[in-house]
Image 1 (cartoon, rainbow, N blue to C red):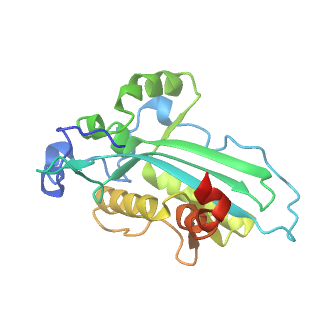
Image 2 (image 1 turned 30 degrees about the vertical axis):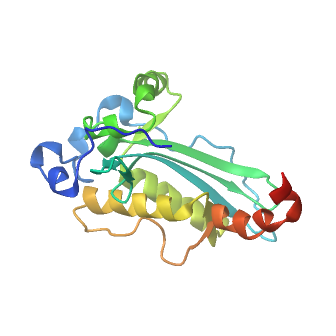
Length: 211
């Protein structure tokens, strides 16, 4: 269950210039420790093109909006943490990526208070300073995803409750780029939702229902 935090912002409040994160081109806004090497993965120099590579992706978000009835509206969620792995149907891992998004994590500190894992923000900073996490622009993270899709010939990306991740990433890129870019993923990528897939398969098995 997502934490209900009153400091979340509506889209109108987010349009306030004081909360607007830096544009992709504003390189002077990035601190020295944020200029890092992209790769944190094991490289495979000789790819077996007979293998069907896929990407498993996950995000962490902020900006959940508390409604009058105390329910939480996540349709305006913004991504501050994204990670993925290139894998195959046997579960072999060929490359991993993990990024903290600068425009959200640093540029919207008050909105970050609405994150489900807001209490872990100090831990994030310690890990960033130690080089255990990588703080990059949203544009850098997107570019890395595009590179991995091309390198491995990926046609499918899967996520648990994929609709949420897709919407949150699209929200983030539209806000940060002022809608110059409206979609985070490559156009021809097909998204798989493992939540729906599990409900349609495992969830219908009598043994699972009994359990």
